[in-house]
Structure formats: C-alpha cells, structure tokens
Amino acid sequence: MTPISILEEIQNFWESNSHTTLELTFETLEITLLNHGNPLDKHIRREAELILQKTNDPLTLTMDVVDNLVFPFLFAFETKEALAGKTTSMKKLPRPLNHGSLCIRPHSLELEFTIEPPEKHRELRVRHVYKQLVLLNLLNN
Image (cartoon, rainbow, N blue to C red):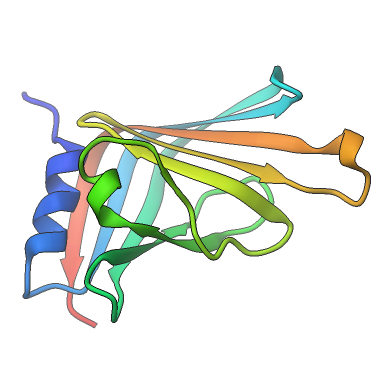
C-alpha cells in the first residue's frame, strides 16, 4: 500500500472550497526535548492528531497541536512556503512558546519550537516529528 502524502492532502484541503477543517491522525509522533541542541529526552506517541482550519485570510491556515507534553496549542502559518515543502515560521504561538517552525514533507511533518522559562539557561527546544498519515477527516464547521 502506498503511503498517504501529507503534503498532498494538506494542499488538497487548502484548495478545496467545500471543507473548513481537516483532522489528521498519524501512526507515530516522536517528541524530542533539546537543551542547547543536545537531546535530553524522547517520547513516542501512537495515533497522534493535528487539526487544520481555514481562516478568514485565504493565505493562512491554523494548526491545533493536540498531542503535546505540556498542553495543546494552536498556531497560524502561511501556506505558500509550507506547501512548497519549505520550512516556515509559526505565527501567534501562545506563551511560553516561541521561535516556532513548521516543515511539511510528503511523508512527515515537523514542528519545532522553544519553551522559554524565566531563566534563559533552562530554555528547551521541542521537536515534533509526525510520521505515516493513517487517517484524515474533512469537516465543515
């Protein structure tokens, strides 16, 4: 069986006029915690979800990160670079998250962001790598 292309499915959703929400379920999510570039800890989650929604701005989508170590969060991103397979920045990240990036490839989706604590030396970088899209659900809200 040919793997489902994450990039292609998000592109189809963005170009569609009939759906406003896309729920994605991935076989695995690898969450890596880094301190100054050095790996501290790695967690593997099964059946991880992301939810994409269209916004009033036709060039922007929002992504709801449902599976996270601390709390679920929502961010916005511009679709042009992301759907060209380039790394793009996350916009409107909730505090204490900052300096986020998103990269969508055909068979993986990667998020990376910083958790900024009060003391700079305790700053953590978090990397989410979603692999193997197994289920998608298009909704109208």
